[in-house]
Length: 152
Image (cartoon, rainbow, N blue to C red; front, side, top):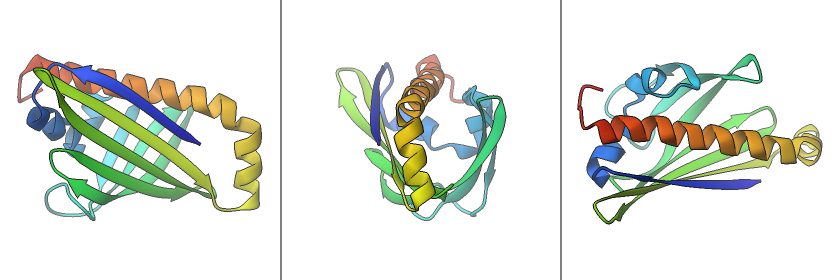
C-alpha cells in the first residue's frame, strides 16, 4: 500500500521544514497526536527515534519511529516496524512560488502472513483512514507555519 498526500503551505521551505521536525511540539500542534516521547538526544536528524501515540478508531496506538533519511530542508524519511509490517513515511519539501509544497508519502509492506491477510481484507478501509489522517496532519502543521509566529 502506498499513499501520497500533498499540501501547499504559504511559508518558506526552511520555516516549514523546521516546524515539521520539532518533535517536542508535535502533540500540541497536531490534533491527532496524543503524545510524543523522543528517545534520542541531540537535534532532529538521521538516527533520531521517538514513540508517537495517536488515537485511532477510539483506541490509542503507539509506534516507535526512526529517521533513516535526512536531507534538510528538502526531505526526511521515518521508518517503523509494527504489527507484522514495515512502514515508511517520507516528507518532501519543495519550493512552490512564495511557499512550499509538502508531500507526505506513506507505505506499508506486510512482513508476515497475518499482516498480508489483514492488508488484503482491511486495505481499502485503511487507505481512506490513513489518507484523511495525513491530510489533517498537514493542515494542522500548515496553520502553524502560516501563522508566522516562531513560538506557535
